[in-house]
Length: 227
Length: 98
Image 1: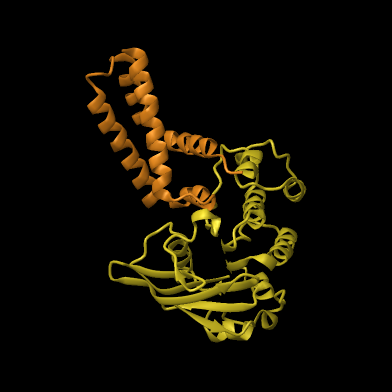
Image 2 (image 1 turned 180 degrees about the vertical axis):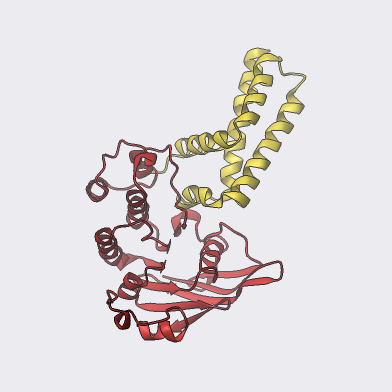
């Protein structure tokens, strides 16, 4: 299955955020999107999902135009700010998203919390892990992860990276995070958002320096990115 | 299996939290004013309430809608279902109190 975004335009007043973005994503593929703060990554994701209305966007599923790919859970989004309500209990969330019993056990084990507690009692990291896992274990074919590693400890970043890789076999995943190491590690293709458009780059740090996303190679300042 | 009543109830809970004042006013009018004469006013208030909730969720806290959209619901159908439920409850109260 293939999801395509074509000619995505979005502007606020005089400022152009998206300027004719094209993007394709197939199931069994992970595409990483990198870009500086305010480059328009989140705007693109929200436009694709239907949370905001862009000036123009053409979404296609297997070549046919689709106005709402989020309907029937074909496409899901993890927004930067999260999507779970504080007052909801974890087991209610798992019920609504139709998560199977064995997956529920895995979620409880990984977030180290009983599923009868409310979302508000989880730490930021636990909450983020819960959101990522709920989307990974539900039946959607495409998922957009906007900063899935926010608030996670290094160990949990590794656990989530592995889980995303494992569950991507039947899903197309679009992922963006300022923690670029795991993105380079996970992604089959990497795109960089510059001046309102997406450019395809090689999956390495040199390219990130060349495009101004990084100032120096991490190896030249004494640490190694996990690529 | 998706449970629409539970989803709508959850939405209703979240929406009520946002505009509790509106709810209290409409419930108060509903319960204490034998609302036959006020049915037009109540319907208008309910419409206004849902319009404000829609604008609030859509413009200010759109990520909150992501929960429902991630369940495969469309924005407008979600609001329509909640509004109909609200209207149905109001009519039941009207019948019971008149």
